[in-house]
Length: 295
Image (tube, rainbow, N blue to C red; front, side):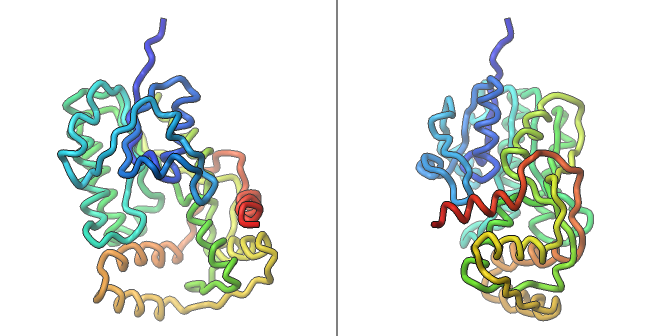
């Protein structure tokens, strides 16, 4: 008789975290969800991600920047899945505080509890953006994970459908400012498809797994898709890169953490992000779903 394995899903209320909770549960795992705000995942997310509050076997309310609040979070756990990270500006914490130090606090407990596998979600094309502080924080943690002695997997998605959802929001307003010419390509992935890759990674050797979705578009084409889904004529204004980078410098004088996140977004527009294709869900359908939910 097989023993039910217990997984800790850190960042369980985020876009990917919710789909991971659902996928782990559907495959028979016991799920302990670590969240900062338990109310947040009682309802569906803004990009269609499911409400998973009732799916989790245990809910731990904690904040990785506050060590006391996550004490014993790995106790009795077989697998750790970490999809938490700073995705919006925070007045009190930087990417280093959350993506590196926060994840490291979980890793230290995972090592002490001798978990059998630690799966971490980082970033694709990290080698092309080594000076971006968000990337640095992620990769500092990846180095810690590789040196931990645990069996590990590092998932490297190139972009979530939820990231593309920001283009949809801008298209709804009727106008998008696009940094650069928008000719670089990307094949972003739906959270449900990515969650399958993440749960598959429980088995196997220690390795890094680059992940993209089934369809390749230029950034400009993704914006045009968003406009069409809204039923609007595309109105896109190009901003030269030098202008965006100048604006970034000014932002940095007033809000360092916002500038860090924006620098990643601007740098990412400078080259292609085409990763090995997984999954079957299409960006066009995702935009259509967003549009139907708005009406």
